[in-house]
Length: 336
Image (cartoon, rainbow, N blue to C red):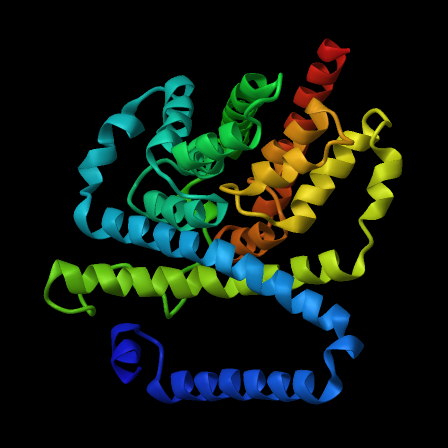
């Protein structure tokens, strides 16, 4: 543990040990409470912990995967690799960044550190944001999971293709709104514990890689934990049965599914199975769930707030919400 502290600038060994002791003490205290209170008396707390743990177990591997990809980009990929993309006209640069999401099997959580690293490596922030929002929907794992979740249904291919199309167009729209903002305008100011150079992690590239992976994982993981806490509280204490009464209400049903997607904060690799279970909602409502959630949800709100400027999350929520609502409304009218 002390070795980790030496590799992460600005982190003292005593601070790491203190945090570790607090975490263990908290777990022990919680275990004693559960043991002596009796499961039947704390069903709500047990449900809260189950949801919280499920969100962490579901999302943490993809945070790690995103940290690994971002570390590889930082250490092994030269800035010149992005020269062609940065020299493309704006009309082509954003679609190209969005389509690049097919090549990165990372979910909504994991794409945030990757986009952050791309912007710091010199990619236009608008293109980095476009990639960040498109990757969780366009990556092959999500496409495959959506196909499997809807296999055998009449609207299987429309759902798969509709999710890809609406996700890509929405991501490009957000990138266009970001416009010509520089990385200094878009990203949060550097913190003392953020280390952006290979020196300080050791003499080899592998040492630098593991240093960057640990730094990005810890940086993003703390916001994921906070978001998972909020999402678990909403799922535990807010009754969701009320949604059934509004499933047949135009517009309201779409807004309800978008809100539910934001509250549940489900990873994009598995959200199609949840959306498919809402059989009381139509095709447009389920598509709204699948298009909005991977770009805007509770845990992403904390991730965005810790990575980008204060106004960024509001901008993303407004643009993604407007595009998703408009697109699914057109689909709802078309399907009649």
